[in-house]
Every structure is written in C-alpha cells, then in structure tokens.
Length: 457
Ligand code: BES
Ligand code: ZN
Image 1: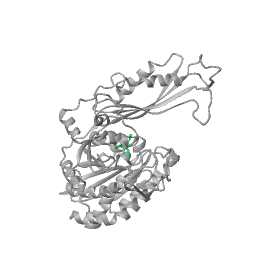
Image 2: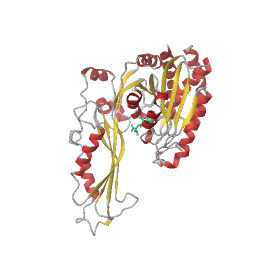
Image 3: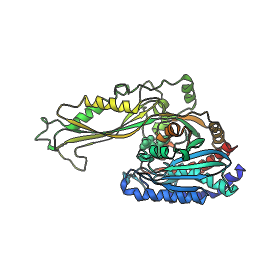
Image 4: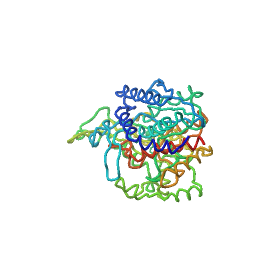
C-alpha cells in the first residue's frame, strides 16, 4: 500500500477533515457535569457513525456512566488498539473565552492557523487525527494497513470511573498487540515525542468546620476559631523553603534518575525560560536541587487546585465563616503509592486540626505513575516514522500529566502502550480559549498514516 498516495490524500482532504472535527467540537460533551449527559451520548453516537462511514464495525457500549465507543476493523498488519477520549473539561470561567467554546472556528493568529474551541486539543482534535489517517488509507486503498480496535472513552476528564470494570469485563475483546494513545503533546513545537513516563495522580478534598454557623466577625472575631485560618496555616506548611513537600514519607518510591537518562534529557535542550515565559513567569518553583525538566517529569508535586471559604462575592462582608475548603492534588512518580500518600496526608493534616474544629474528607482520583516499556518493535518503527514527518527527530520523553489508562493496558490487558500526540504547550487545554494548531491536526494525521504504514511493514 503506497504511503505517498495516502499522504497526498490527507493534504487534499484537510478542509473536509477540519469540518468533521468542527462538527464534533460543537457537541458539548462535558463528562463531569450531569447536565451534559445527553451531549456525551451524542458525541458517542457521532463517533459511531463516523467510524462506520470508514468501514469500522463500531458500537456505543453502555456503562454506569457515559458510554464507551468500541469498534473493530480488519487489516493485514499487526493488531493495534487505538485509545482517545471524546469528553471535555468544563468551560468555566466562560467570561474569559473570546468566543463560545462550543462554536468552534478556524482563527488566524500570529503563530498560524488554529482550531479554537473546547476539546480542540484535549482530546477530540487528537483522536480525530487517527480516524482521519484511517479514512485516507481506506479511501486510497480500500482497506486499512493494520487490524485496529478503536476504544474511545467519555469519562477521562472525570477520573474514568467506568474504565477499569469495562476493561476487565471486555478484556478478551479489547486485547491487541499494542495500544496507541493519542492524548499527549509534542516535546517542543517541531519535536514529536513518544512519552515513556507519566505521572500518577491523587486528588483530595477537605472541609474544615469551626463554628456551627457563619458568624459576625465583630461579635465573635478573636474568641471564635476561624476555619480559614486553620486551613491556610496547614496549607502554608505544605512546602519548606527549598520546595520540598512536608507530608511524611511522601518521597518513598521516588526514584533517582540514572545518569544516562539525565544526560538524554539534558540533550533535549528544554527551554525552561521560554516555557515559563509563555505563562508570564520566570522562576522554577519546584525543589531547588532539581532541574526544570525533572520537576515536570520525574518529581512529585502537591498543588492546591481550589481553596474557598467565607464571602468571595462583590463588595465586602465581615463574616467569620463556619467552613473552609480545599481541593489538593499530588502528582506521583516512580513507585509512590497513592493510597499510602492519602493516609499520610490525612494524618498529617488531622494532627494540625485544633480540638474545637472538625475535618471531613472526600476522595478523588487515585492512580500510580506509569513507566512504559519500549521493547515492542512498534516503538522504533514509530520513532522513525515520526522523524520522517517532523523537522526534528522524535524523542523519548516524560509527561507531567496523567493518563491512568496507560497503566491499565499493562496491568489489565498485558499490553504495552505507546503515547504520541500533537498538542502544544500553549494549547490552553482545560483553560479558556483552548486551541489546536491546524499544523498539529494536519501533521498529526500524516504522522498516524506514517506510523500505521511503518507498523504494517
Ligand atoms: N490530555 C491530558 C493529559 C495530559 C496533560 C497530557 C498534559 C500531556 C500534557 C488528560 O486529558 C488529562 O488532563 N488528564 C488529567 C487526569 C485525569 C485523571 C483527570 C490530568 O492530567 O490532570
Ligand atoms: Zn486528555
């Protein structure tokens, strides 16, 4: 099967491929908000119809949450599974968007054309790069180069509650030789990356209660304990002056990097100044003794993702609040154990709660870090294929984000997973004005065609 003809077709079909992505982006598939349940269903239906249009026998498969989309198509090459997610993050704060997040469009920017809208990069644009590569192959050759299982999820952005049971119940059907995951980015805008390390994630939510009702801060201030004071004191002690997290035993399981890996990462020439400069910062805030790239890829973090208490509306209110809340997440590396960290973090916080206050906890995401093996020959084939498409050769890289399914492919289905994607650091995923460069979309489609071709060879 000639690859050149497929690539030429991808080039000429780009406007139509972009229109198809815009259609998918108009569906408001916010998985975390029950108000958008029907929209998640609609996105799944859209994908089933689109996959069927290229000869994939696809179905929407129910779960207790949002449906999965599973499809199969035969081909001569090895059996690969493709994973992506059709759900998106909430859009708030809506007032910071320059357009309706679900009325996507192509925009001209100083850096080139972008597809603007919620999910353009994470992950609808990315998953469509794979489907479009398949479409071009099918149109050109009447068949696909590999046997492919499609596995598209609608709950990734809300912690994938149905994923593990679904994978276990359908293990035989989902098992393939290797999983391809398109939910990560380029290393730098001209350098494609195969991500071999992903950080894990632990989410915690806490409520500290002081007085049993909101109080007048003049009448009670001074005598009544304020839970916001308790919370801020505790969170203020989360790091020492060197950026080291103070939760006991947190660093257990954090590996020392080998000299070889350190040297390889140094060779990548990461531009920390530019990376921070793009978001209005200049000083790395992690552990003092650690290099910037290690801070993102190879060290744990503790982040306060949300904190609220008292009156935060317009104007002013002299309230002494009854409650103070925070959402805190930890990114995990190596063999750090999320459950042990949960236990130690809670004990550390609880030991600092005054006798007069109470604390309540709510569990959120919990998944360990994953380390990919790159022994499957598909990895080297893909690395070469990517190096043919992009100006710089492809790099094996780490990833600061978390994609729990990458680990489950190994533990549940005993498959290696290869993570490649075309997102850029400035895509503003999860934020207002999310975009995907038209170049990411175009070269992403071409890259998948090259990877499938190389894997089938
Ligand atoms: N696509 C992201 C993962 C990602 C982020 C890859 C940044 C590369 C760079 C994914 O959709 C995501 O956001 N995952 C969540 C975890 C999930 C359990 C909520 C994350 O990393 O916060
Ligand atoms: Zn994603």
